Image 1: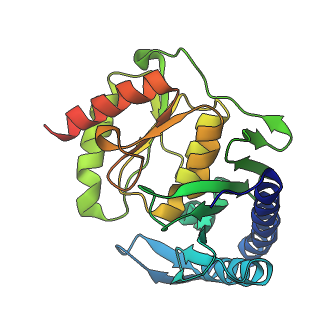
Image 2 (image 1 turned 90 degrees about the horizontal axis):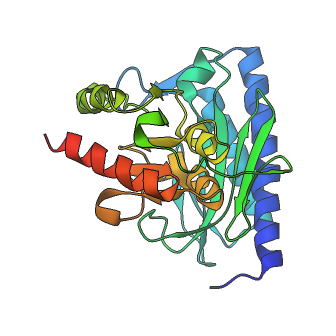
Image 3 (image 1 turned 45 degrees about the horizontal axis):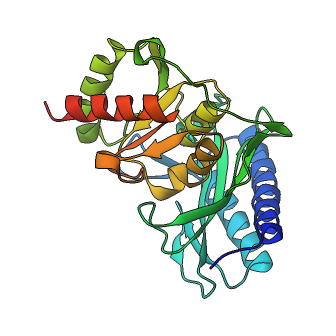
Length: 272
């Protein structure tokens, strides 16, 4: 399937408008008080009622606008479609930040072509919204990335030892130890490391030049679907292990030369 430019514009508008509606709902839920509804991979990996309410709204709005498309959401799972397109949704990326009222959480909505697998899909359009700051990041395939109306570009010609690097850690404690060990070693070879708590915002941070690079492993498709497209359209290489596309095994985003160097470093440290 090849969409005409106006088709991508329509998809991007739907993603943006849906994210704004869900963001407004989540922000109101935050103001009303947060209710922890369940846990997932561990007792500290939480789901709030606001996550569920926001995803329900997103799913409903997308079904009205694009009834033939598929859906993959963090809270409600997958739903098949017949169009060949799937919406990949994280209603609140950074739920622990949301719980603690830290203003670094996001609504992430992307639409992809093909199976909803980061190793094979083609991302078409995406939006990441920080409802607290009002920042709206958008991108469409071949159309660049923007923060509001400002076109974004990644930082280039940054040496690894001068790079500010974003990363994240699993909430499953048995998965966290290797990530801590690698981060500790990476910290000795870069300018510094930041852990914000939202993969979507980290990837947008690379696009906006707030980070030079970002890496993480253990991510789910909804964590990075929109953010990876935004970073790529701002000029980042988004890569995984052994040159594969970024995904659960590893995702690195940075200007191409730095991304390659950081990916090799992370893989070398992981193999020790």
